[in-house]
Length: 304
Image (tube, rainbow, N blue to C red; front, side):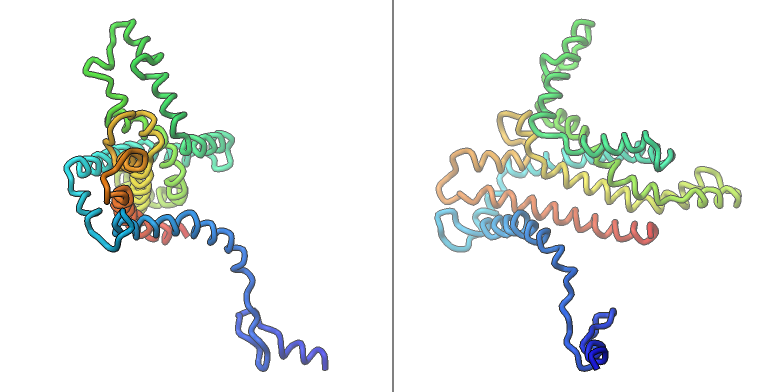
């Protein structure tokens, strides 16, 4: 009798309640509660505050579009243009160079010591930024950096037209430092998904290396490559600390404009101007990441 009662009140493995029994609540979702709470507090809540604040008057008033209209100023448009140029240039260089490095790493042994060292180093360098990275470049190729002085002593002046390290060109170079290892990390799984048997099959059918890359590996890796480049674009577009340490005056990119709006005096009634700038960045990053998700879905279909 006790056995029959237990069977009648048990829940099968498919999640449906047994006849005459009660549905048991699954407990697997409890493991995701800390992550959901973390994302809600430190990502979703600040994003909502920025979005709503961009449409509110700074003096505690109601709804307004004045904050967004202020983005139509010349120096704001220039900051957005510079941010796009900086992000696109560093993403393109990082994607090409990092993609080549990822392919070289993938041709070696997957359990080799060198691959572990390189991937570990990429994981560290991809997160290396801010004041530390800026200081490293200033001490190396700054106006009085070690390499700058060494080259000047041998008749080579890399700053004959001005110290470009502290301008947009310099930011592209510095950003590329952490874009390349990030590309290696995000693109390596896609390169690993290319099977050697596919090349062998192409060669057995009379195809050359060009045919293999043109008709087999290229079309398969292209969505992953573009998706990784978009991720690099979003990473550079939202970076702040490195640029803030290099560029001490002005706001040549949007993150610096936001920093200036928070640390400097603002016009009365435009206290939410910084939130309007952040809202513009959110829109750009959201579009880029939506495209990234679409491309990643295409990539995962043949990786499975």
